[in-house]
Length: 303
Image (cartoon, rainbow, N blue to C red; front, side, top):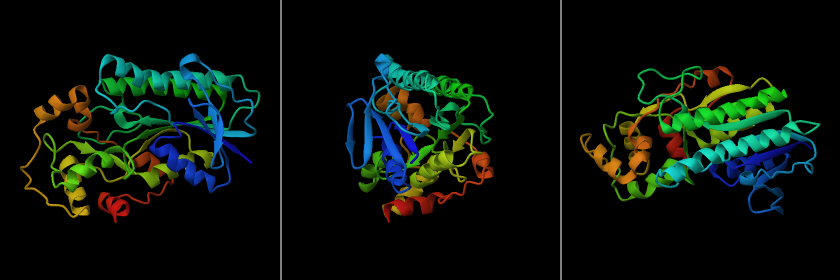
């Protein structure tokens, strides 16, 4: 039986990925800082990226590594210490995986890593492709450094895939979990200009893309993981209010930018700046989206 190794397996995407992989008869191993144990048929292995401690010798027939680990970008205000955590959690884990796998006699077939659409420039008129340059902000710098480490796996002759993930739509985490209580109280309104673009993806499609990375031998390189339909913050707000059956305010009702900046500091760019990202390459890879339009995607989650 083929073995799959996952980092970040306790996060939103990781947990849902594990659930689907279990149905496909893989042996699943998840790296955790909590030590080694077995739960619900999943093998949890202890590792310590801060001190470069990782041992994979007890994994038989290791076929694929799914790298999802990384400190949440919205887990705290962006102090200098938290910015360092965001960067280190991605760089140190990737370096440790590389150095460990490099020493294995039998290397895995493929390495699949999460990345983020935060790589790109903000508020562009045209949809940005995988070959476009990175932006200039903090997040763009983090993603660029992270991807540079991930692409080192090509030197090990492993099929290497980088997934630049947009806003993941899920009731269990991400943007919708934050917005749901606000909209339930009929307080959901656009923020800033409301014109900033939102490139999103449904959780089911995101999981299917990762599985395609495992099973499709031609699926390698860098891919934007966003649905074909991109929407403005204003359109997103209207669609979510409609889905939840909540009152929709007139279009001129908005939360001013300065309030968002006061509340969130440096993190305000996540809300006030838009990312216009192309999905053409992943569509051309023969991936079929289950949810290419926003309204059906939201309805599938809440209805």
